Image (cartoon, rainbow over all chains, first blue to last red; front, side, top):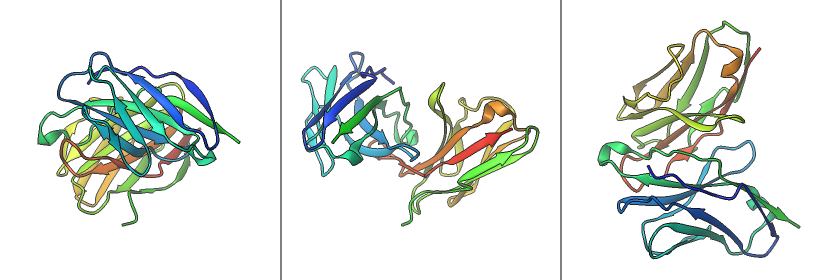
Length: 114
Length: 114
């Protein structure tokens, strides 16, 4: 699976958009970009994933550059409850037997300030 | 569904004792994962199962660790004998097998070996 690079920490004001970047310059054509987050003392939580098109769900938006070498997770209106470590993961599917194997890096600690 | 259920939530044991961590995956999910999280090493995949069969146990640190999945609704991670360096939070996750599926994590078991 391709390696990802994320800033170790970011701050955001409550109510503003939080934009979390991720570099994955060695991504392959069949690799997806996944985002998870981990709120303190809880298990990681799935946020969103995409291949090459931008994606949006009730939690966030995912913007993937045209060359797919980087992406940005956008939390449109951050709240204090969004304070967490955010993990960007690039995952290759190895066929139906791969399941959802995820390799976590160090992630970005997002702190939402009042 | 109650989600992935892990027990116990906290375990304190003495060095040399056997420790058994338990996991009940989400009904209908056929992939199960055990992760360990420490400050030094972050989230590490220990082992994962597809359809109750261990697929990759390369993350298991040593022979003191063993994992079983006797049926689709139950898995155990056993450490025998336990050592202080095994102190960590152990997470279990489950997913439906496939390329695009998300993994759901339990709340974790915080293990302290003294």
